[in-house]
Image (cartoon, rainbow, N blue to C red; front, side, top):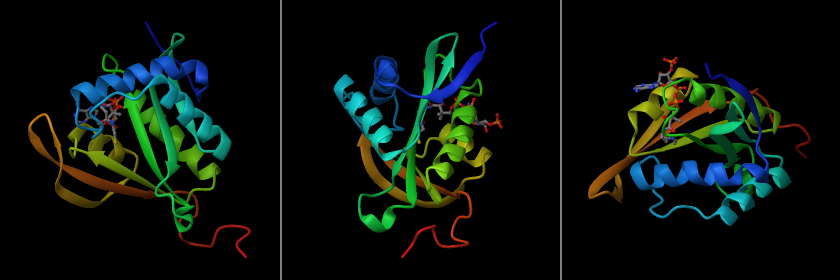
Length: 178
Ligand SMILES: CC(C)(COP(=O)(O)OP(=O)(O)OC[C@H]1O[C@@H](n2cnc3c(N)ncnc32)[C@H](O)[C@@H]1OP(=O)(O)O)[C@@H](O)C(=O)NCCC(=O)NCCS
């Protein structure tokens, strides 16, 4: 029987597997509003950016193969968003529904808090019920729904926002604030 051997930080050696997982969900799903797959170079750049900014980029490994990944990046570029992150989480299509998403997201919450983020936002394309259920299962609350903002596969698609506080949340200011 196969088991998850690790949730660990991604390296550029994982980029091929990560690119392939994302390509499947771009081509077959509405969780992402991308319509063309990300290149290998773009995946490598994302891993390197997360390393450089000390943002978490995690992979789940099953018997040495990558079965899913999750990362957290600053929610918006403008400086006042420095303590809010947006997550991204994708599981290999043959491995969904086996608990990998929940394990990845649970680990990502801890890693993002350690990275100094105080809020995490999930931007759920298509309002995917499985993704909403995953996020609700670890404590995210729905924060809003944008109606028919996406168009993919000949359908209008909503975007659902969910949010969770990390660490102290907004109970106190971040350390080292002038
Ligand atoms: C959404 C996704 C990341 C979830 O990962 P997963 O490994 O399939 O989910 P898990 O098996 O860890 O299940 C986590 C929770 O989701 C819910 N869930 C799982 N499968 C479900 C299903 N078929 N229907 C409804 N809820 C489901 C359950 O609440 C479960 O929690 P529980 O175990 O406490 O009951 C994965 O299905 C995926 O990659 N989907 C396509 C891309 C996507 O939507 N990404 C999210 C972008 S925001």
